[in-house]
Image (cartoon, rainbow, N blue to C red; front, side):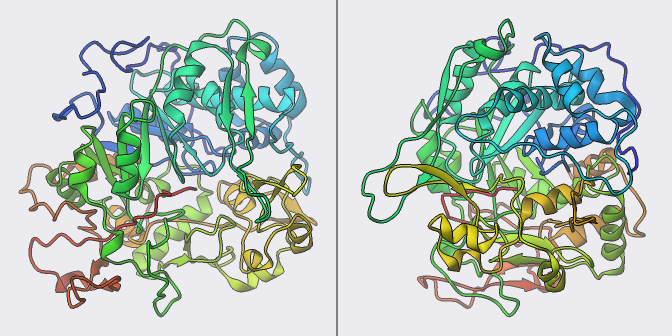
Amino acid sequence: MSDRTPAPVPADGGLAARAGRAGETGGPAETSPNEVGSPVAPRSEEPMIIQGGMGVGVSGWPLASAVSRAGQLGVVSGTAIEVVHARRLADGDLGGHLRRAYASFPVPGVAERVIERYFRPSGRSAGESYDKVEKFTLRPSRGLQELTVLSSYAEVWLAREGHGGPVGVNLLQKIQLPTVHTLYGAMLAGVAAVLMGAGVPSAIPALLRGLASGERVGYSIDVERPAEVQDPVAAELVFDPTELFSGAEVPGVPSFYAIVASHTLATFLGRDPVTRPDGFVVEGPTAGGHNAPPRRSKERDERGQPVYGPRDVVDLEVVAAQGLPFWMAGGYGTPQGLVTALSEGAQGIQVGSAFACCEESGMAPELRDQIRQHAAEGTLSVLTDVRASPTGFPFKLVELEGSLSEGSVRARRERVCNLGYLRVAFTDTEGNIGYRCAAEPVANYLRKGGDPADTEGRVCLCNGLLATADYPQLWHGEPEPPVVTGGDAMADVVRALSPDGVPYHAADVIEHLLSGLDGPRLPASDSAVGLAATEPARSVDRAASANADTARVTTQDPSARRDGEVLVAGSSSDAGPTL
């Protein structure tokens, strides 16, 4: 494995106080209070470009640092961060970056215990597997809590080192058990923003305030129950920072940006001060990773992909009426996409695919090279697979040889659930709580009361995504195959940055995206999620009846578009994207 991180940057910046909300510790005086219904003017202190938080390990500290240094919001992925760090330590902590960050952790003894447990000065020997990191439960061990908090802290610390730009962290509502500890570690390091989707993140604003207070907090965990159990089952993960991290102080409450796929969810979150975020990322179904399923249609196209229609369009006027800034995501990662988003009233855009293939990305170098080369040759393809993810949500697969996008590779892989991030908590008829995943061995899943239909076609995304980040576990002596994700427009986005398939950097992405701002702006769409400037683009078939329940969203030659037309599509499910 090669050292994918850049040389150490000067540490003269330390942990400068972050720019947070008005009236809270560390907040800027010029920020207006976040009041329900307050009008929004363009906010000069908000970023125009948010680098998407791509997990597992693709959005690491080198990428977030590069984006933040360029004046935009760099974001680290908090998903499985404790496993990522355990494996970096096992590989010898190339460059010494983790140990440098660990040395600044404010609670004595924590870093020393983690290093003693996981660090191997000479790295792993050939053919040696990574040590197992225990799975989270409602009562995690002290060692797992310390590893998670320290890892999240260090990832943000490194992303912030040597400059004063803001850094965010991305988490997933679907992956609940590590959330509190990951947030706490990031907040100790002065994270400026938290971004979260893949569900209804209504508890996060209060959780952030609770963690900043340094007091004991509880975080409710969703629990599935059998049909014969009528009443909801209450499960709570309790975290008291004074028990393990006494003396540590959180510098402030970070901003919270909820990732949503429907205006209904934006309205729900925005109407109550308790659940109200500081902004929204509005993500359509062309984005990489998980997508919300179509609201009504079960129709599939000729490749078996879900078909989205008018009921899946996000009404941006409703989103804007919440009085909060919002960013557009999913098909906006081009200069024209940024111009279009601004014309639609957005603060800017969130971009993933373009950054995933840059040199600062945590994606394995050989996978980045393959994607850039296929994009340059016009042979890169992305499939929205409705069965791959254990969550049941559609998931974007970049079709690469040797990856889990190939049926033969899936068939050869033995089912195993040794990471468990996409497990869900469940209860039996006697009230006992357990955990299950639709990608685990089928017999195990059925023994836990799971539906056999849920297991069909499922892929272990946890192991696959870690392999994509160049940390594959060895199973029977063979490395886990990768699973690569990207947006529908990945080929065109990457080809625009690297027409010859040569490497490029995060700064090149930002320069490219901002290059269209001096030109004329496109007319705004009908206040809906736009998919402009993506080649090929998706459009709602205008021949469909205006009052039809569904309309086919088709791939279309961009030359067939009318001049100035903003193509629309979106996702109305109350669950947003995940990994």
